[in-house]
Length: 358
Length: 224
Image 1 (cartoon, rainbow over the protein chains, first blue to last red):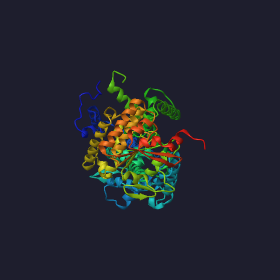
Image 2: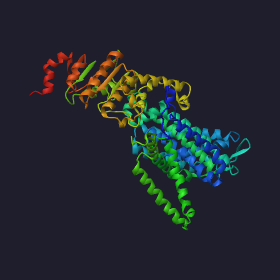
Image 3: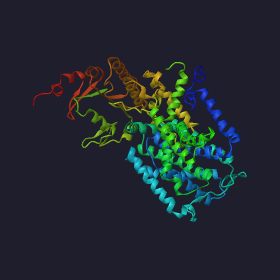
Image 4: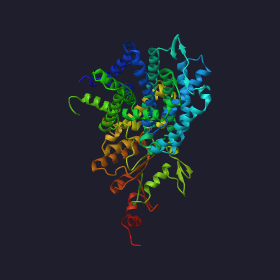
């Protein structure tokens, strides 16, 4: 049918190794980027941008971060919320210390602090595997939550214990703070997420990504190929925490506008982990699909009864929402334990060979 | 090419593990490339050109054939994190050079058609072949093969024997082979070592070993 690579010949390895070897994929991704960068800001109102698109992109970024660690390198982590918090608090302190520096630069730098913390809490991964490592990363979650609440220096000794985002401008456009318009914030978030996704896709298809996957699939064989286990795992922890840290900084600075300790609690870690598991471990597309499933679907479900003219109380809608989303999670995981990304891949494969089943 | 044989539990795989650095011997030394040491580490072994295949297939199951073999090139690739992240310039050149190299291995092993297939979907015989390819990608000086023909049918055995002989002749790789199929062992190897209960009981050409009374006793069992 329309999705098939017949007649598209590769005459060199460079073309064969590109991210999207099939022309239809390249067209689709181009269209998607145009839609995201140009069409979406034009047609979407503030509610759509503020409550759906911005958080979706931020969660997708955090899910990519966790996916690098859990999906690609096979190290389960429950410390995502804490690492996001490190990014947010680091960015807050950086804007306090360097008020005139470009805020986007500061957001990208704040991830480095998160990466450092991630490496420290990643050291046990040499000895501990699987669920036991998950429990060990819980320690980082609790420790970081404690630090955000108790170290007053982190929130500039203010009385509320929360961090308030100051207004920062780039070229007369307010990017952060109460006066920043949703369109500007959306475009900034989108640019950062697209850029970091591109970096992540480069990492996972190159030597480093292969090292991570080798450690995940068979650490003994990987060691024999000359992969240094500790170094590789720590690199995964660093990159993963960097992504989570940037996502955390974006969450506070470009979405919520203020945050306190509760924004980075264990529920946040679980939320991101669910996105990764449902979207698909070891897949960047899966991170986006998972974030959409967990974040956007409930919003639609909440709006659905009103659209169809049913008068249902808000509390009932919320209950129904839990039931439907929970059931869907179970159904999808039974249908495809490898996540929605695998379903997507299977669908594409079926299209390629259509109308035959093989 | 040297075969290591012996009854079950004789310590053949343990010996490979010692050479590889997974086990550290309590006594004795490993002499490799003129250098003696009491123990290897796995990374050191890989760096000095020792590659290995496993008795139970130890491929990276979530990856394609191509990626599996590319992992074998890991030590030959030097570009750091920065270039990897951009996937541009030197990193891409390096990636493409190594891709070209492993394509030779893929052609050699006749696995062109399954390049992009995830290895978990391959039949057992092909998995063994991919594993050999992954070891070859390291351009090893010493190749340790732990039962490369276990569980194969006659045709697959024939193919595998041919590949092993070709590797030995074309690339000049030293091969240490553990195998239970005596026909294969006697045909392929230049020398045969026999282990029993962790001790070397014979060492010689296939013909000599076949006639050795201690070997016959070890295999058939004798009344003590």
